[in-house]
Length: 595
Image (tube, rainbow, N blue to C red; front, side, top):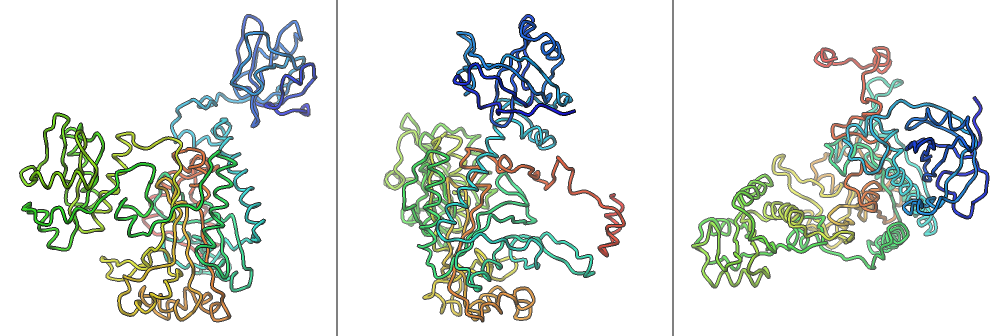
């Protein structure tokens, strides 16, 4: 059946359109029968318009309207008129008008939806993802998609204006696992061989710099087979950039300008530049995290000197073993119950700490602590001064190895900030974390790991330390953090093949393995590779924070669950024996049995 061609979207009409004859098409969102006069809200992505069906206007349209149900697709012809006095809906842009329907056409009927298509509904995420095409009809979700569209378009404009070229890199590529597991794609025409889906365009964008492209960007799809959480998906999108002949400062300026523009235009926030910068060691000491949330206090302090002469056995043993004593004060924390303190102790132990030590400065002037007898007046005064705490506050302390104390206190800091409602709403605190260590030591495997990735350049003055004290080598890496979430990271890259080979050697990657996995990059670096660097910002995380959302799944059209399942399409799924045969794949007996 041919349907009427609309001439307006449902959110466009205003009082200035009074008297116009219009055609609207959309979904029936609400239907109300008021004693013979039927009202519906007709919706599309642009908004909603109230439609009135009355037998006095058109009996046939009114009769058809009696059979309308939620989410029917209809077209309406009618006259725009002002709503009667006292019935204006100030919550809607179209709230001053309504359309008196002279004709109605049902284009398609709908089953009863499994949930109301309303913003205010508190829906189970599993149901939302199962019927994602209905969930996306909700105005709040359409708003998220529009934000994604507009921000992505503006990023393209900004980077193009700055001389970047948008260039696509391959989706089917070579497996070069250096972080998460690769998603592998078997080759039908090359039996026993596999492509990998890209974890990032890292190596390709470096080769583009060798090619002389100078400034590259891509809205890049990246795929990683890793454990999922609220801000992580197996496939995500990043704003990927690479530049030649640059310093970190050049990259900061470009990213900061872009951030200021998109937050100003789409969030209404005036981001003050330059953004704050903090060395990695300072971030770990003060906040217990390499992505610190700066919206609240609870800063961690070193307390070693205060307890250097303490008779408390736990503290003495930790300090003798080269450990640290660190802590922070919680305003109003003295009201914590013993049960809450036990829960917090367990929470710290889950983060690796041996335990949690606390001091409650009670409102009545009393003191409560499991180590009370080891706290003379002088020590208490020094603690109060160092942590800026007083009556009614609580002190949380961990005595352990530096990395363990940082991890435990960093997690406690975030948890207590939420429980005590210390995080201000609508606050945006950006931070560059810089001067990361180049390498970390993997005690389980007894080898070095790259803190960022194997292609990150060390500080030139630290290169001699690669042979003598690798853990002291600083990298020219940087992360952009917003409200405790890592928006993205980057670095100046290694552009000399000799340094890159040295890096592989430190990572226990043999020359043969390096040539096998990364030979094409090592070869490219021998053909006049310029100094270069870049950054990748997580578009999904950026949009999540710009939209004030709790999960990146709300800015992705068809996301996966935490078990990496697409509930809409029921994937991953089994494939036919013929497909497996074409790919020269035979399932293991235990897998066949499960199927």
